[in-house]
Length: 510
Image (tube, rainbow, N blue to C red):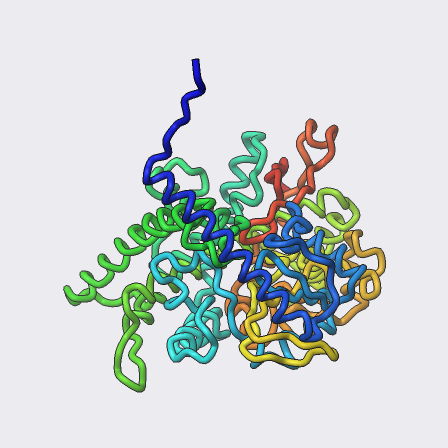
């Protein structure tokens, strides 16, 4: 029998033709990029491969991989990640150049592909350009009405209530001898604190028995993981329209579910207001009452949904991951745990609850939080900036459109600044006057400059209060099987740097 050749269908022919054209287009863009930047005096960096550039060097934990490359190529380093020229700052001085000395030139955002869902990047305070009137309006209302000291003071009793609920739940688990899922409970507590501030209601249940309440938390947790996935569309924007990994489709489905749940609360709130019910004076009331001084217009519904999505996403993972890492480090360092509890005994004494007014006296607890931020920064690269103009930095040229990353993990592990950088030593912050509020570039968990995280004041209060309450009210140990095998401190990088194996610990009432 002769060999029978299969005739390709017109659809297959078209697909084959489109694939060839796409490869040629991407190759042309890559070669053009090489020719364009070859004479531009970029910072030093590793040699790159065609198309993929230095992507293969990133590995599963790019903050560590890029810190290793920076040791060879310098604290300000240029790479090609896919077809995108990327400059990475890996020292305190390089970070100061990016975030302070050239703040205006580098204050733009490198817009990730997933933010195109629901046109999120055109409504979000996180992704809008700093020159945008909408960005300024959102920043102003958040800084003045949600994170301002007088507003935080007003909601102090609410935070006290949520942490009291956390302590009560852990007390019940301790009586039953059940391990405590530290990060899970810290996430739920942070979520309920935010939802009570915004909607005047809880959106999650500490023991997860309420299915409806569990849904919001589940969607939010999945969204935080999905948004943090490495996405080819962000490295080779020329193929973004294909959504080859399906990341954009997954984010779209999660946004739809999250927005639908938030829409229910907004609609109920608006109906109650229309019916003449007294306002609850929560943050949603503030947003609904907002009017721009220029045109007397309020925020569009999509802007409200984008802002609330950002607040819930940033305000839950960051705080819960920090509490979880801090507890893990203390369980591995019993002397630090003991010193923290002694300080709490001296300052709090026989009082039932730790209060926010006590935190200022808890110097060692503050040092523990700083050391946790240094070792395990919530966002090891911060969010990506983009050069809005071609700028000279340390004698090198940063072309317009370059993506800029600040590797705060590498800065926190810099042996020239931090002796024994891998070691958990809160004592170093009792001797060294370094803060994390954007002025000291050796410690930048929340960034610096006009793009610094506006929620820092709230995150700092809730992290200290949760951690102090858990240490004051309970003694902690690892489960026997974990103690035998050793605690897994492996990192998982999503939106934030979290523990790959969630921390479980046994609590005993103190």
